[in-house]
Length: 525
Ligand SMILES: NC(=O)c1ccc[n+]([C@@H]2O[C@H](COP(=O)([O-])OP(=O)(O)OC[C@H]3O[C@@H](n4cnc5c(N)ncnc54)[C@H](O)[C@@H]3O)[C@@H](O)[C@H]2O)c1
Ligand SMILES: O=C(O)[C@H](O)COP(=O)(O)O
Image (cartoon, rainbow, N blue to C red; front, side, top):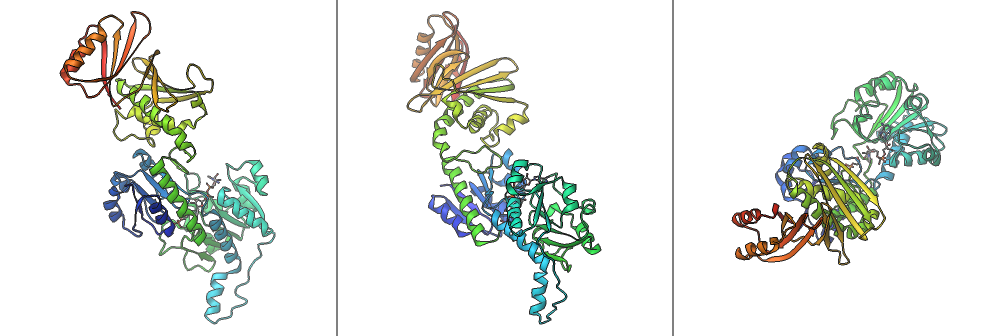
């Protein structure tokens, strides 16, 4: 039975869904990294929020793990390159908490403008400090949204509703989308120069890390207010503190920190700072959304092979998965065939999808072909890491699609170029959805591949079939199927023979010594 670990506090809906789908689930929030490392080897799936750090060290111990599901958006707590190299699919739930987080950013903007946390404390302390908490209006102010994706665009929408003027910096925001959202698209420095409020909504990347630093703060308006409900590392906390002290920044609202959990932080205790403990996604609604979504996505992946919201592999929808299934088998067989017969370094791979195959989601099929191809050389290769492994080995992979039906309604052709030669193999699906190999090295045949196959290249001369039959018969090896093809009369021929058991070394030597034979390979599928 497939087994999943939920290692962070998550809505009970996640565990319910796993169980309903027949997935065994353990819930162990709050484990230390050592405890996680000790038990992770038992699990096929790991469901996390932001507290669990799925580091390279943890991933190295996760010998059975197939998927890490993030019930939320940010995956900076997951070492994606390490997961990819280990063949583990990483998925998140990109929309489930977006409204909630946008609402938190708006709430923080109000709190900051009206000193609500401090005023609340003072009032409950019996001080009635009415004049101390003079605020500012949001009406008519300029909000600069940095990162106008799912959350940033909801923040912009809400702010427009509050009659703010919204400007946005996002290199990937198209002018059409900016118009649709009702925001003015600006360059970053222009946004800094014009915004009264700046709200951050980018992921943490090389280009966004430390984006709020002393140099950029100097470009901002005197009295600007900054809201960060995205990621701690976007802000250089020391520089923000200095600007808050000098008054250049009038206030900051901070939900996320460079170091979390932030039980202490240099911004704590400042009058003009409002803080929350990474609460952006913490509403009943958002937590139910992301819990349901992550459990469904992970179960679908583990049980059906469909892939949604993966960050390191192509998506396969639940609708596509059954359609792709027979092609997956064909792709595995073609890749594995080519991998087993290829003896020298592969330089390039070309995959042609023809006829009906051209209309499919080909990315996962290409990944499976590469997995089959590289599998005989590398034990740990799978559908997730196969494209990366190929790239790391300098193998040039190209795909082509052509929806014209030729001899077959649907065809997948794999062409491998090694240091010595170019070899191709093509396969199709017949009405029964069973894969057939229909051509090898341009020689036509029609063969179903079984668990034990002999692939023989020989000269098309009399006596070969009889001699083969005698050798296998004497060795008491039953022949299940025997397929032949040749390029021309007396030319190069190929035999694909399915046998019911493997050949001993001795029998193999006898086959190799047949005068017509140029090459023999025992293949396993
Ligand atoms: N505080 C919380 O609890 C909480 C909750 C949810 C999400 N988040 C964080 O919010 C952030 C945004 O989430 P989202 O769902 O909107 O993501 P998203 O991918 O939909 O949007 C991110 C946007 O940032 C833009 N971007 C990328 N690089 C940029 C750059 N250099 N400058 C400006 N823009 C850039 C992208 O083009 C994209 O439009 C993520 O970091 C996520 O982890 C925090
Ligand atoms: O990226 C996210 O989705 C948020 O940071 C939420 O994090 P959390 O699940 O730990 O609340």
